[in-house]
Image 1 (cartoon, rainbow, N blue to C red):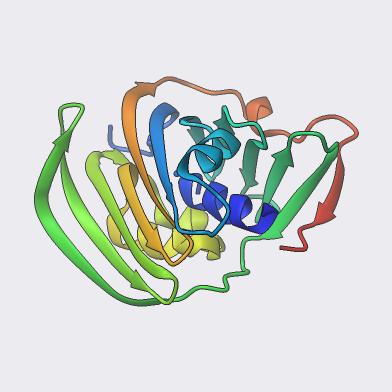
Image 2 (spheres, rainbow, N blue to C red; image 1 turned 60 degrees about the horizontal axis):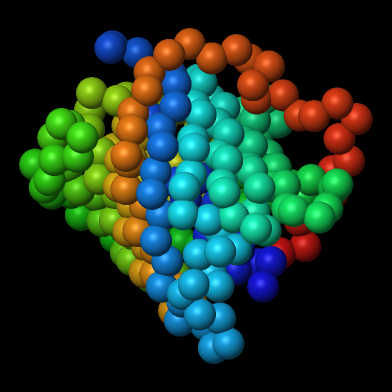
Amino acid sequence: MKQLLLTLALLVSGLAAAQNFEGKIVYHNTYTSKTPGLSDGQLSDLMGDVQTWYLKGGDYRSELNGTQMVWQLYRHSDNKLYSKFAGSETLLWQAGTSNPDSVLSTTLRKGATEILGYQCDELTLVCRSGIQKYYFSSRLPVQPELYKGHRYANWYTYLSKAGAVPLKIIIETAQFSMQSVATGVHPFPLSATSFALPANAQTAKSPY
């Protein structure tokens, strides 16, 4: 179960002007379970339906309102993604270079939709795991090279093609489908301390 939750969290996280976007984006997330014994409602409760994503340079932090997944933190300096689960003091980390998935093909469709007043292009990734669709605006840029080591969840592949934060994500796999849509975009300066690990944090490599 934790492996499924971690995969989902990485996707939504990992699920925001002439330089990089800096600030906060709020998303509404919906899930459809394809896993026997796990209902849509149960999956939504575990993951939460509201995600708050903070971005500064090559670092990001994702906070979720679910009962199991609490937050995720990606630190560019050590190229690791840390995950905090409810009921555990130990942060599980995943190396950014690790990626069990791979992208088979990509398709770009210009002017696909409008989200929150932003005209968005659509980037479709056909992956071994399924289909991933991202909707993004060049008005919210991200420097892809800052995430060159972040191969996990195909994040660098997406950024290398889009160069911007996603405002909508649709994921289809054999285990679940997910849709994440931005409900608010809030540019503002963030302190580097927002992306620091908690004091005396215990960490362990994720077994998932």
